[in-house]
Amino acid sequence: MASGELIVLFGPPAVGKMTVGRAVCEASDFRMFHNHHTIEPLHEVFGQQSPAFRTLNGEFRRRVIEEAAANDVRLVFTTVWNLAGERDADYFRELVAPYTDRGLPVRFVELYADLGTRLARNDGADRLAAKPSKRDLAASEAHVREQEVAFTMNTSPDISLPADRVLADFPHLRLDTTHLAPAEAAARILAM
Image (cartoon, rainbow, N blue to C red):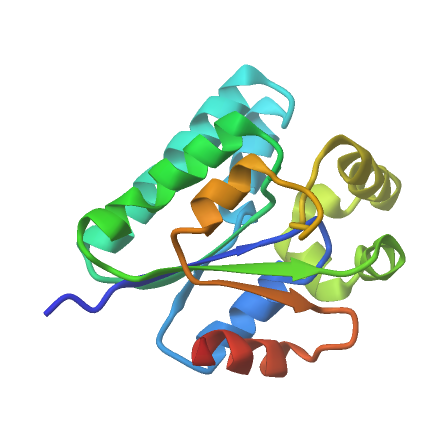
């Protein structure tokens, strides 16, 4: 019997995706695949704004998820998702397909916190240790602010988004991480 499972843990930069994902893994047999596992080596070689970075980043993530599904791995994948983007919605539906095609469960967990909270977390030691591209704090803070303006990274009951068509097909949990301890967030995720 297949035992793999995928949790897509998404939200804006510095909301706590990696920290909460690690807490899920510590409390279970899930394994972590955070977005910077592919970003860091590609950033070093190509820079994040290059077409090669975008192409390879998408391909590497897709392949890791395909292999995890094929090997019944229970995986937490963290990512930033532009919920207003049609192509982004299509990408995420395709990304989870290796799990759904095998009849394995997929859950989406959305983390949110206000911009001030996220900016305060941006220079956390654990974040900087795992994400070398964030160590230029001025550039990292500018990135958090730019993404806040450029993308829709959290759902809202007042706005219909392309991502809603994907999320409607899966269990979806929305957690405010402003005052929520990572272990408590993990417990809620594992209980869904």
